[in-house]
Length: 68
Image (cartoon, rainbow, N blue to C red):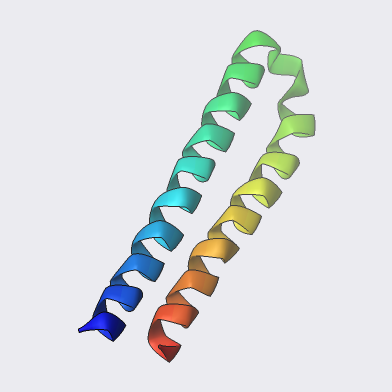
């Protein structure tokens, strides 16, 4: 019973937090591009890197949930 709760807690927190982070990164990038359209090439790559690093946290949480 406790192990199932630990798995559910790990994947819930490990999934919600990166999802919020990716949403905030995308929102901030689109707002920045909307205010300064000429800077889209300078904003796009850091935005993708930030999203990839946030997604890696979700993958780590999934691996932890599988190993429990």
